[in-house]
Amino acid sequence: MEDIHLPIAIRRSRRSSIKPEPAMPSSPMPSKTPKRSSRRVRFSDPGASSSGLTPMVNRFTVATPKRRRHSSLPVQTTPSTIRSSPALPESGEVTFLPLRQVLDGRVQRRIRRNGLSEEMNTIQQEKRRRNQEAKEEIEKLRNELKARDREIYELQNATIVVDTDRIWDLEKQIQDLQDELSKRSGRAMDQSRGYNWTLAAREKFSQDFMDMTPDEDQFGDETMAQFICSTPSRARTSFMTPPATSPTVPGTPIFEPMETTAMVGVQACLPDPKQLQLEEEVSSLQLEVAKLTDTLESYKTLSGHLSNKLSDYTPRDQSGLEAQIDAMLQAMSDRTCALQTLTSSITKLGFTGSDASEMITTLITNFRAARLELEYLTPGEITLPLSSHGAEVLDLMLTRLRDMAKRAKEDEDAIDEYHEIELSLRKQLDARVTVMDGLKAEMGKAEKLISDKIARIRELEVANQRLKGAVDGYIRDISELEDLVQRMEREAHDANDEHAVQLEVKHKILTRKEDTIASLESKLSSALTRSSDLQSQILSLQTSHTETITTLNKKHGSALAARDASVLKYRGEIDKLNESLRSAHDKICGLRVENGGLRREVDEERVKAKEVIDAMKEELER
Image (cartoon, rainbow, N blue to C red; front, side, top):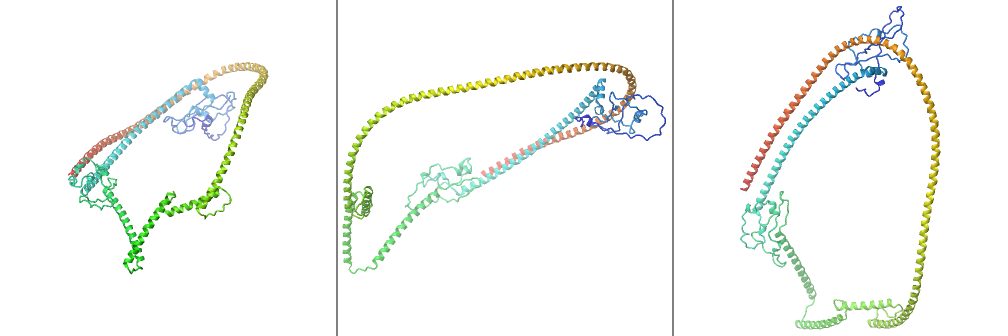
């Protein structure tokens, strides 16, 4: 079956050559007329015991002489040893090769004419059907085995998943218990040393604030995280901030400072509003103290300087010193009044400055800037120096302003003349513009006519181009038609020549067929004579065929027995496979029962864990 797709010439097995027997002493043989030997079945050398198609059926070969139909008979006076003695091989085992492997085309045609090909096809179809049924049975058993393996695998995975889920649930319950214990322990510690924030904004001597008895039922079902993260019931603006100069108020005996603690269960760090308020008050007091310290330092420095200056002077008469001090103070007050009057008068002038000296400096700076600006505005030689007095600068500025006013008046007169000239020029320009507008209108009309003519010319050029293209197309079509006519004429001429040649060939074929018919008639007569000879050969073949059938029936019985044995063997294997499947099914049932027991155990453990948790909650509430 593996070489079924190869050509016959390649897949045919090489025939084993039979060694010739040793030469016998030649004896004079009587001469006789050579004749065609009868056809016999040729048994080849023993091959493999099984071909793999059907058990205990060997391959067989029908050997035919390699002769052509019209080849002459070989002149052979002595028949070969194989033809004279068609005996069985020494092993007693006959090997039948497939007919399609050893038969040539002529023998296959003869078998097809005799109707043996249908029997061969029936045998091949039976073999294929058996092979297909065996393959389907094997595939069915494999599918059943895969299905059972899949069920076992799914049950194993289900058991693993149930166990994993149970372990995860237990770990989660343990973690929840640990968190609950840590929360309960942290809540007890905070209640033993803390105070309620919601009472911080009440009155100083409120009776409710003095109730510091820890009560676990005060917050209901709130957790520790909700208690810590909750905001006070009143706004922070209710806390009155003391002024910066007031002394710090001592803390009430109710307040107990709390250390900042970080808990694992509650990831929150909230600032203490009391602590922040105290820190702000301390910072404001520190700023006030720093300011007072700086003032004292300045007073100490001033007193030190005065004491150093007065230490060298030792007055002899205390009354004279007081009179001098009074006179000095009176003179200072008079001068201070005069200075204030001068400062007010200078301030009225409108110059910037905080005191009289700054105003005077500003006045000097402005006079100098005016001198420089005058030199920039009126170029020319100025004999007045930059360090001159303000009165001279004012005189120079007035003189220059008079000159500039005179020049401005002259310029205004010239501008009036220029305006009159401009009006006359505008009138002339208006006249010229009207004339130009008329010319532009005429030019627009002329340009429009020119553009229309240009567009018409372009349209005519496009039409001319299209006409040229059409003419070129007509010329090309005419040339193609001429070529087509010439080609058709050539094809017609060639067709006529070919028709004449075909008529001549057909005439020759007809004569050849007539000759063939005559030869076939002669061959038919010879075939009729030959058929009589073949009938005699058929009789001899029928006798040999009956003998061969008897031997084949015997061998077929032994083959059937071997097949029955193989069938029993396969049935035993199928029974074993069924037993293994039954055992797998029993294991699956056992695993299902075990899985149900594990589920019950998981439920019992959950109930026990719940009871333990409830007991722990009751103990913690106590």
